[in-house]
Length: 496
Image: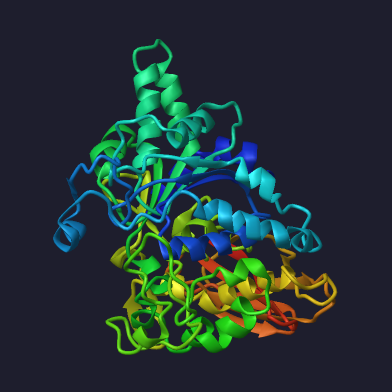
């Protein structure tokens, strides 16, 4: 499997080399559920880390507008078909909520610029808002403003990849690809155009929220890379109490969320949905979470005011945030967006599930959610720091450290060899940085013995190591500021 992944990385190596020193390009498609709203607020806090090139309203099995003619529709997806039956619309939150949140973002943008000049303006982001295919779940018959925008980006001359995030269904993305096929499949250079688009597009999808990937994208564009998250996102979604280890849950509870993220962090965070906050999304009758009288003894558990509700789509954009884990090119390495293994049926598709499970140290068992939940504390502290950036000066806020490994990130070693890694850190706030070094066993081929002495980590390769095996060492540096911020370096030891 590791050899297959290495070969795949080589296939896409040229594309990566052309864009590795540039910001990643991304387009978001969203159905506007309340967890999309919360995801979008977090997304805005990280827009300094990548190039946003589209914010596209789309539909899903849970949310669609209807055609305003009363046309009845029954879901193709078994779950929503059984829940809702025949409908003429379904929980549609409209096509203004992104613009409304950007108006709040505009108010905090000047303060964000104090912390990073790369935050895009609200005006620039507003120009990227497009309406895609929203009338029905899975509708991809019509060319829409959103689908045409995606197609245009996939065909442009910028060699960088386009990271397509499907927070809802994949139908607007599918319509964009279908338009390209319709326009070019009869032309002499179709083979080259299809190859270009296939290498350029990456789809990160949260479940199948309509049938368009299975019915159109997969069969017709099999060489488009797909990162398919159907399991790990649940720990960052509505039933998080059932998936998140007890040690991580305090960072999702109201005592942390209210004080460090939601309250006194500017007008944008006043729009962040949490349990018992009194808010109600227009168009969605199922949004009960803001009513404090209804949040005890729910099917998901009992909740308190300001408890986290859901950001089930945040893993999608977190794949673009470079915290030093080097997981963008190879999602089997794992990072803040989860960990994915190459599909046995299609080498261009990466999936979570049993094959991508990690050992949960609290239970001692393999856990399909732990590749995501292991990062919740540092992710939440990082989010809290960025909430501070909305209201605090640079001097009064905390900023992440930079971690360095003198020997580099890729080292050849022999079985039984002892290797010393010299670690250093830079912290713009002048805070001391504490190191932790550990083996990411599931990301590689096993564990190594590690001894940390001051800023030196001594790594002992097992005597039993075989040629070609990889051992992944995570160097984790956490500063002493508040919120304490963590960055990493991944060192991959390859056995000769």
